[in-house]
Length: 125
Image (tube, rainbow, N blue to C red):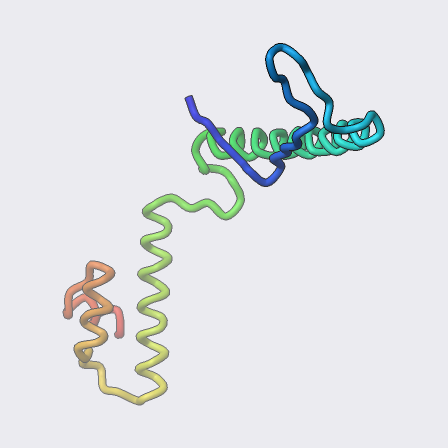
């Protein structure tokens, strides 16, 4: 069970009191009608929020993301990230005109993608 509370649409107003079984009204019928109208507006807005929340919750628990637009599995993401890293390293190397020996930064980049120094050199070739 989950409870979700929002104070944004809270509505409180003192309209009367009871003492020794005797009820006393503090507001007139016109003001009471105004309060009822305000409360009904807030109930309507609250219903919209509840509907919006339910739809978002249904979407969130609808199941796996597989098949949704922009989704990629773990292996595809790993390969894409690896290719991006190698491409960036090659671009950086081309800009600076370095020789084929990877430096410490390239080795660290390769290690982040699970590559050793020999694999980096092979990828550079």
